Image (cartoon, rainbow, N blue to C red; front, side):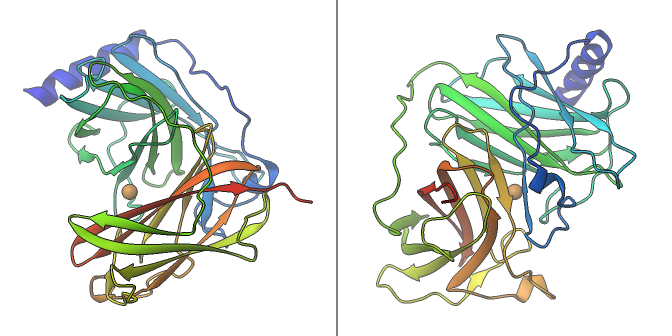
Length: 324
Ligand SMILES: [Cu+2]
């Protein structure tokens, strides 16, 4: 019943929808545009080019225009339609979020997608005022209808932003952003984002304590526009290095980086891919990621790892400096 209801909503929306999503931040920088999607040596991709701020609409829409290069004549404007149920998410109550991807502004929902990082769709959500409340979840695809859906309960009311990472089969990868509000109680009062005073912190994952260190090379303080190797080191509560990390999303770990304005979004791959037999891979204590920050400023990175079935999420806030 629920799926049927969603289906009709989407069809109706597609017919009457003529509005263009806003494009309120610059397109890919030249250095990023030169990188072929997902296949680059740097294993990083970044986009925050397209955003849409809904008011009280139950139906919201984002248009993602991918970077075009001379090598890519078949540039497609994908459309990602996001729907909340209830229309405005309420703190403390489950919200059903669904997504439909179409080509251009019209057309049938795309039903076939390629797997990226072991999943068909990645959904990252943060509070867009202070980068708190990080959520990294994976909506499920209803293959019959071409609708991705997931339920999520927002603990607090506030201003949020989500990034959707998905790749239509034989198409190009879409990374698109969408801002929205959560209402109700309690209200989240944003904190001021400040750089970390230390590069070591304690993280509790499902009742277990870990010590996580983040080191950046070649400089501990990254410089915009330069390749940066970010290495997380995972130790147990007593400081003993952990060497039996388990694969997470078919990799040794996962890292997302967002800037303080929640405009720049970097989904970075581990520096070393797991070559074979992902399931039996065990690694650590160090997992490295390669990043290239598009501009100076404050950023927060969330490293995610798996140990004995527990998901460890460690975030670090740091300054990216200008080139001297
Ligand atoms: Cu994911």
